[in-house]
Length: 168
Image 1 (cartoon, one colour):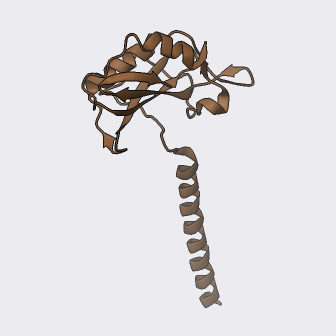
Image 2 (cartoon, rainbow, N blue to C red):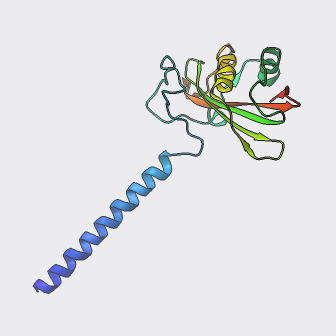
Image 3 (tube, one colour):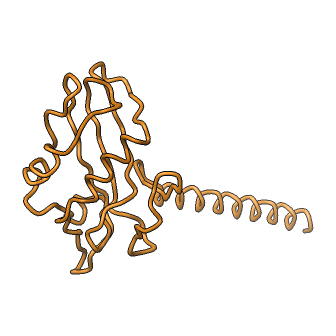
């Protein structure tokens, strides 16, 4: 009888370990998302705060938008933006968070050149674009059941011959 008890204990222990590993895997799989932005003290302002302890949602999940749409963004940014320090041709995507108060922060950049190869974006260029986007007043945070939420947004800049020619 003790032989069966020891086999049963081993099976219970193995089952418990498998359940624990599966639970941890599922937790990390569903709480980490591609493109999530975490606070980075080297580039992010400590003045910008998220409104909740929950995860930041995508703009299309909650309806975050800029008053006047992309046309208004283009009208405000195009005269003030420059491509100094960036490759002469390519696309620059600036991804950031719009908190529940309509404030922006946690700016991250991804750039591809005309050959679709990833290009480096200097800290100074990121700060330049972040400053311009921070000055945009008119972000309307998305809502779930009338509660404003933190969400991601992005603006893409098209660079041709060293000049920003389009914003979308």
